[in-house]
Image (cartoon, rainbow, N blue to C red; front, side, top):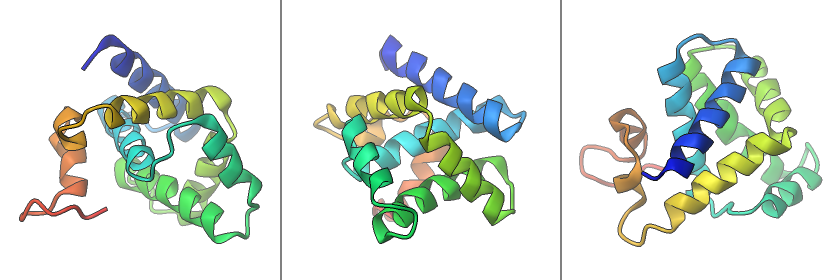
Length: 139
């Protein structure tokens, strides 16, 4: 990992802490990595793509799909069982340009590795979300 990955992850995790109030920094780091991995696998590699998803409107399938993935990762790593809270937090976070910019940068870093996205992730915790016992993608 280069310095830019570390810096981006740190900023994304900070915004997660600021908005969720969750106090486990390691879990927030995992959440940042996982959301970036989602961006990379969904091929969301620039800010305009996020803007276009948001412009679809809150009732569109694409918007719901996007926010649902972020809200799920908030649930997974902050252990907050309240679906509506996670949803509204995800919507609030996607409205923060620096947060989106850092995630896009992280996703771009992941996408530049021709060998394997999973090989770049430091955390076994995040990797296990995407790979089951048979090394099959579960995304």
